Image (cartoon, one colour):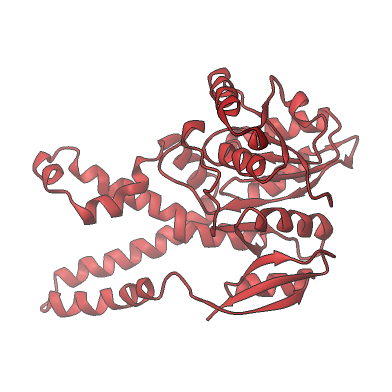
Length: 334
């Protein structure tokens, strides 16, 4: 996977998969895409014909056609469909690199270990991935080749360093799309996104539902309601798969939020609800004002697992990878 131009297959052409397809084609890679839905394939073919000649892609009729010459396969299907895609890749004897864009990493890591093998032997190298670039819209028509510009894109590492060479190559490819690569283990990722992505989806849905039987509230809804419930517009099936697939971590994060909300509820019954709520609100206010983290100084770091994981654990990210793949240009928060 060292060539400047790669053969890449993208399986699943929704918002994220379609955006990956478009972004890779725009950057000159040879890309084949497949989606189980014939209508989505037709839409993607039409869009390919309308794209600039140097940024087109090919849409295939099967997974086997898509991965035939692929050095890298990006699995961009919902979590419930990942296992079946891995099974088909294994049945085809696929031995390239496989990554995914699913918002849960532990279960996908386990599926890869169990399914991407034949005769007891591992086939493809698997590197779990998750671009933090979702929107409330979905489908290929929402795909955007610039969706990943400056977004954080988690690439998972194992503590034992397995697959580090392919990890570094994939990091080079993704930073080439304009994203910031964040190293983490699968478990670290799942705990973090439960707090900043999965639980917010649940809270947004609960708040949005308040207007279901209150037309006056619906009419008065403005900025706070719009911003606080934006992700409730995501398809319920996708949110359910995301949160249910990360149930242990989501449960812990949700318990923390519920405990905090119970404290706010108790403050409303106190002798001084305004003063109590002001104190309750302050930590969240300060945290929000400090977000997003501002970049500090950049430095070249060796592309070693222990170094990369330490970088991710302090909230750092990778801007680029050296041509010899021995070092990465890294940034820590200021």
